[in-house]
Length: 194
Image 1 (tube, rainbow, N blue to C red):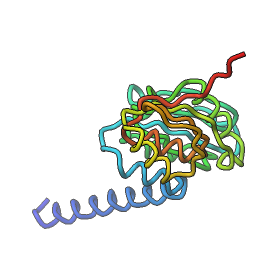
Image 2 (image 1 turned 45 degrees about the horizontal axis):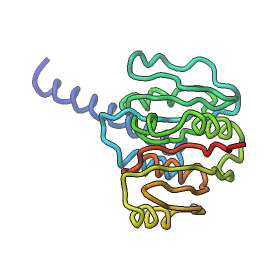
Image 3 (image 1 turned 30 degrees about the horizontal axis):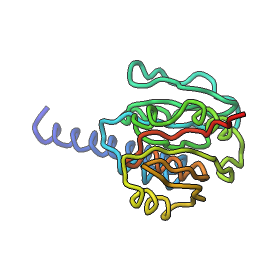
C-alpha cells in the first residue's frame, strides 16, 4: 500500500471511531438524566462510578465487566453498580434499559450508609422515584455556615445543622448531588430509638 492509501484508511477509521463514540454519547444522553450528565462531567476520567440502571422489566445478565465493575444490589427493575468510567458505554447495550442514574464516584460507596443505599435502590424500581423524599443525617468536614449555605442551594428541608452534622429531608437527586460533591463524610438514615 502506498502512503496515500494508508492515510485514507486511517482517516476512514478515525471517522468511524469518532462517529461510533458520538452515537454512544447520544445514547448515553438519552438514558441519563441531566443531573447525572452534570455529575459525570465533574468527575475525573479514571474514577469508579456508582450507577443505577433501570429497565421496564427485571434486568437479566449484565455485561462482563471483569475487575472493572461489580454489582452492589438489585431491587425489581433497578440494579446498582460500581463501574469504571471507561466501561460506562459497555452498559448501553443492555436490552430494555430505560434509564441510567449516576449517584457519584467511588467515594459515594463509602459515604453512603447501606440502609439508605438499599432504600434508595428499592424506591428507584418504582416509576415515581423522583417524587420521594428521604430523611437523612449527614456528617460533613465543612463548617456549619458552609453546610447551611450548601443545603440552602438545594431542595432540602433542613432540620438542624450543628457541629458538622445536618439533618434534613431531600429528594434522591439532591442526595446524589451531595454524594458527588466534596466535604461529605457520611450520609445515613436516621435510626429511631424506642
